[in-house]
Image (cartoon, rainbow, N blue to C red; front, side, top):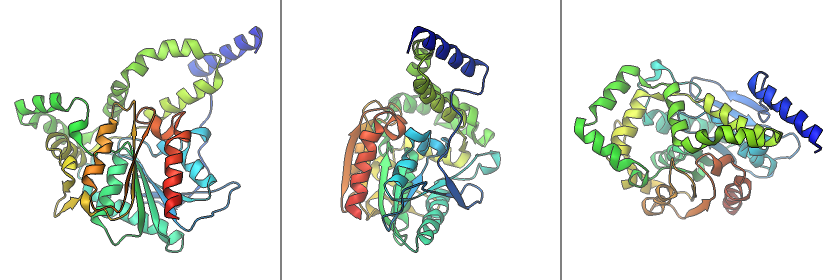
Length: 350
């Protein structure tokens, strides 16, 4: 661009970010809502051009405390669009907002109710087809536990992208456990009970702290890229994602704190629910795990731990992708790494 064009673009972008509606309006992938009940909205993504070429269905499983838009940030950062473009019938389960009224919801609700129902409905919509589960972050743990706890479900495979499967490998665990040992963990659980969970504003703050370097570099990043509209649009999509983060239900967070962080049950390959223990060794379908080289939320070693605990699976494939926690799912390199790993993995099941 000429100097004049550069200055004009920079001024337009600065205005859009400061006073306008933003660089780029949201542009979600076309979809149809098939089922809409609290915490279990089921969406089917529609193809604008490509036709369905496979018999199976893919169900995208988001984590809690992150919006379901993680799978569809913008047109070129959308795993949902990519899967549809390759001829796969693609579905998404969306939990919506979490409030004080949901404080008694825990892993049980997702593993024995919400996800099984979504799987059965996605399968029925495809005429009884098998379903490939693709979960990001805790969504990957949800998917694996659901497959382990419900062997009768029509699940063909499970993919966990950035799924934390060993909390001993997570950053800061020794320090957290040391602090918890002083109070028996009661200070944290008392706050969570009083609040009914972790409110959305605190989740947003926590996510920003986990990406503190990004927050520090933001002013310089804006100044350096103010004339690069596409770069700013990508930044804006991340900001929009962070702003939409919901909270954690109280019981669910209590389970994360007590059973995952303090006891590391998931690292031992199990999780105690209300009336049963779910064992990761009971996953009987092929599994793909993807860890990120720069993931500070779920270090790749915490994902790789699944090679040790998923002993009942006929095959467990572990891949590494460059990027952060969200980056390995929807970042600039995801199309050439994580998405290709997933394409190959699913093609081998076809």
